[in-house]
Amino acid sequence: MIDSMKPIDQPQVASIELAGALLRAWAKGDRPALEVELDRSSRTPPDLSDTSEAERLQMLGAIAARMKALVDPSAPAPADLAIGVCVNLLSHLARPTKPENANRAGLFVFR
Image (cartoon, rainbow, N blue to C red):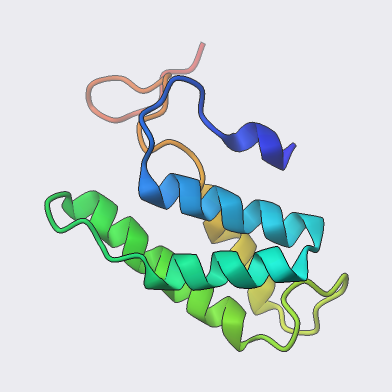
């Protein structure tokens, strides 16, 4: 299901792409890919022309730094509960910033 998180027909947004790639590497338990994605996520400079994206990239960098500090973030049963928080935040960041079912006020439209 994680592979299906990539938005269809959405412009590429660095924070979304990086968070999704990091989440996929973690979910697959692919330690080498996870290390690569942690490095990419922690070293991507923020886009200063877009403050919202800059904030998302800063959050992503903080999540990657926290995951790097874990002994083994890809362990099946991590002893550090922070991995759950990191994964939840990555899941949030991997979603498009403007949901298709949002109205002009930024609220979700329920049908």
